[in-house]
Length: 428
Image (cartoon, rainbow, N blue to C red; front, top):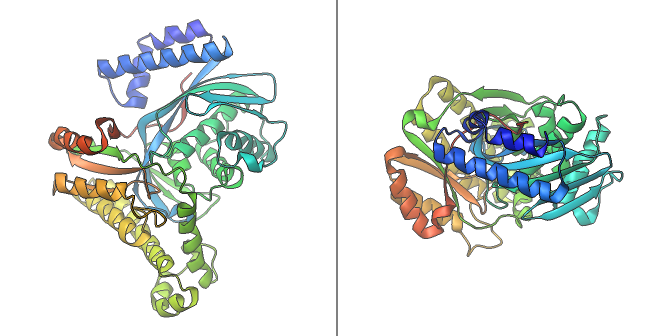
C-alpha cells in the first residue's frame, strides 16, 4: 500500500479489529494509542525511505509458562505470545541490499550477495539479516532487498525474547516479500534458530522462536527435531479472575551469553555420559540409578542438578497440558510455581554466578511473594539470570501490586500483559 492508503487504513474502523486481535483490547484509549503509534511509525518510515508499496508486520514477545531450558535438549515446553510487539513497516526493493532501521540500533545495512558468516557481525543485527537470507537460499527459497523500519517495544534484555521476536520478523519479511507467504510458522522458527546458532553465535533452543512464530497459548514437544509436535490451547488467565504481569527488573541480560551457554553445555555433558547427544535421549531411571558414578566422572554437581531439573520439567509440561484441557486453574498455577521453584533451585538461572552481588530477579521474586501471599504465584521468566519475572495475581490486587512493585523498580517496569491469539503476522 502507498503512504496515503496506509494512513486511510490506520484511521479506519477496520484498524480497530487489528487492535483487538493483536493488542487484545477494544478500549478507546488503547485504540487511540496504537493508531498514533502506527501513524508515527509510518511517518518515520516514509521520511527514511520515501513513499512505496509498504507492508505492516507485527512480531510479539513471549512468556514461558513451563518447560524452562528444556527445548535445547529436545524436551517439552508451554509458552505463549503476548500483546507487546515490535511494529515494522517494510517495502521490497530491486537490489540485494537489506536495510533495517530502528531508534535503538540505528541503520543496519547488509549486502546479501555475500551470505558467508562475518565474525565481526556476531551478536548484532546484521548477522540476523545476513544469516536468515543465507538459510533461505540454502533451502532453495528466494531472497532479495528491502527497506524496513521498526518501532520496538519488545526491549533488549527485557526477558520477553527480543532476539527471537526480531528473528521471526526478518523471516516473515523474506517469506512475504519473496516467497508468496508459503513458508509455514514451524519452518520459519527453525530457520530463525539456525540463524541465531550459526550467524548470531548463541546456542539457543527453539522455544522462543516457535512461540513467537506460532502464537497463542502453545505446547511444543521438540523430541523430533525436524517435526516438533504443537498443540494450541485456548486459555486466558482473565477468565478465572487472574492477571498476568511481567516485571522488568532492569537488569539487562544482553551480555550474559556465557551464562546461558553453560546450561545446554552442562546438560549435554550429562547426556554424553550416557552416550547420548541430549537429555531427551537419556533414560530417566538410569539417570537416578547412576548419580554416584555420574558425579564422580563429570565432577560437576551443577550439571547433575540441571539434568534433574530437565527431567522434572518435562513431566510438569505433560501435567500442565492435561490441566489446561480440564481448565483446572489451581492446578495450572501450582505447576507454574513448581516450575519456577525448580528453575531457582536446580537450574540455577535466577542470578549470574559471575556477578553474585546483582540479584534483581531474586529481589523481584522475594518482594512479589511478600505482596501477593497466597493470592497468586510468581516465577523467573524465560532464560533468566537477569531481565524479568512473571506474576499471576488475582485481579482485585493488581493495582496494589503495581503500586508496591513500582516503588521498587519503577511504574513503567510493571507490565500487565494479555495472551494474543496470533504469532508474527503481516497485517497488510
